[in-house]
Image (cartoon, rainbow, N blue to C red; front, side, top):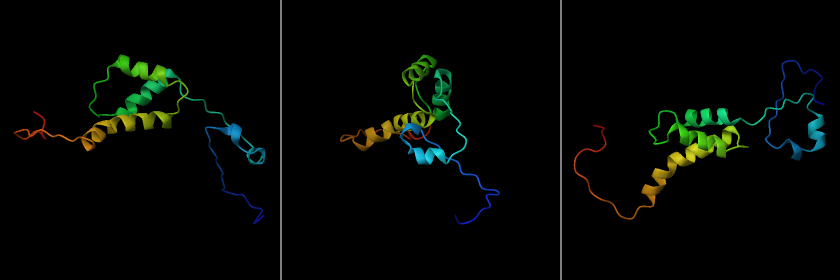
Length: 110
């Protein structure tokens, strides 16, 4: 190797699919820590967290249903789902072919 000192060096690896890693790679990591996918209650909290203060029409029951239907999803998966859903209005406007003129300043609430 390049040197014998490993002072202050930490090598960390993460994967959602450890079973596809080559056995030679797995042998080089002394310690393995399994972090399970989030349970239903945690997934519901993740949906709320990623929605943040964004206005939406989801009720608590809707969020619970999303949490139930996303069994096996990671936190990153849920983040992508929410981000994709939040972009739907933008996609709808981008593909619109007809627009209606409105009067007044509709950019300000109230």
